[in-house]
Length: 424
Image (cartoon, rainbow, N blue to C red; front, side, top):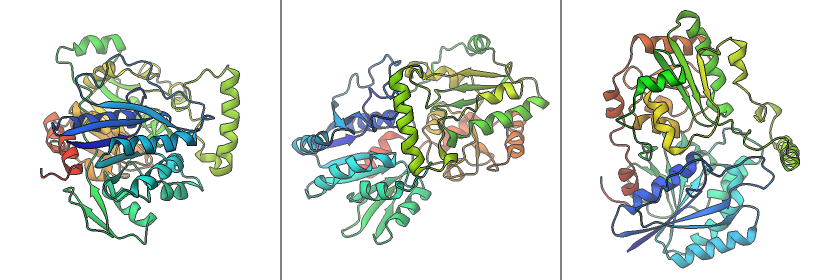
């Protein structure tokens, strides 16, 4: 029996990385000769961060029917738990440990754990790189990243951009890039360039009455969807400004915004929240440029500015996993007008619903969005281009079959087999 540890937030947490980590574990679990353990954080970030990361809305047990064992053990704020995590993983005796790397601030605990595991030649330490260059960079990010991931023998990236950035941050390392999962011989490091798999945890409801839901939500004929946490890099301000221009030319369009404001999850009236916000703001001021601090980012205020209250429908909360499907099913197109982009979980969800997309020409979107086939690309930073692209989509909709074709090989099974170094 081959044993694999998948390290990252367990299913009790909300957000894309928790969904990703759980989905990867479930993919491994489908192989009868593999025993899977999720080793999870209990707290992922410094305690002063003013945000709630726990999924308190979803009802279904994501691990129901699996053999997966979950261990909640690692507390960012307790270094003793880091060593406890290392000892736990070592006691499981895995052949492979896959760390989810999604934010530089986790570099110290993950680096500590990975360094100790790397000393055991029978354990392959893999870092699944959701980014290399932080979207909101600080003076410490590169150092944190280098320390955090330097002990890996194998890296996984989801796009060429991330693979190239990995080479930049470790110029003295020799990398072999493969798309099959075949490992390089030491002293080379293997980079397995794969893809962001399609989330199959969100399934369409074939019995959904789409017209009834559209009526309930007050949606018009053509529906554009923005989905996910409201973060500055995702460019919701771009989406709303572009949509305002679309609305000037058509009155049969709606913009559906579904997602939680990332920094608005705690009660701001509580003293504990005020203390956390003050301390966190001070810490950010030491390392971030003022323009990079997004805590006051409020793109939803643009709705009133452009008088779009009748055309923009906002579900400003964390949506339970069980309810995700209906928002994708009543929409015609997903809007990804990001400022910067590494492979997107929202894009992955849209593939599962065969939903075409309009996106900006940034990051990996130029690799995955095939202009005129599964979506359309707009010029980054150009609101007129974004609006024209949305109008063009209305007049030239794309078949859902095209989306299915472009994502047919992006399964979790293929992804897991590459990590297991099997042929597919």
